Image 1 (spheres, one colour):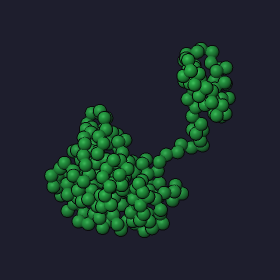
Image 2: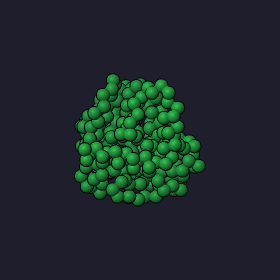
Image 3: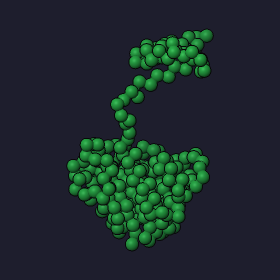
Length: 246
């Protein structure tokens, strides 16, 4: 009985603390003549941040996955291997190309044309020069910081990049995305790289495309084939690199 009173008290507090929701709830209740759904105080679930003028979104993650999907649509690989990128990218792309997804923490996602497997970026389960179409997006910047239960290693990102270079096949494509701007580490969230640092880390590969997602919308959306000098004006932008191995 005591726990029931606690639940009721908690729900009442939720209602009182949601002044913008209560009038809408009472209006809905008064207009509901058909009573098609059960209404209970225990199911009160106020959402008070969604009455916005426009639809907000994460610029990095919406734009970079849209860019990568366009690259796959243009290159038309027979199979694509993704290393720890956004699951949304792999899941949606598997609608038109078979995708193998590898992550330190495998995803229990079941779709046709999609396989999820365990993989360590510092020890990828592929032979040298094996993968023809490869992606690793918004991932490298985290390696070695311990954020996802991985081993603390200041050079973890470099080791992971060397693994990507090792497994990429000759004439294969590597879709790579990471934060760019003024070089910095915001522990334990991520690293931020300069354009020059990324080019240096991928020495031996050829850059086919560099596209940029500026931090602020007034500076543009997805800028394909961007001028690298634009990175110098950014603090936390998103750099999209398409490399190939010759």
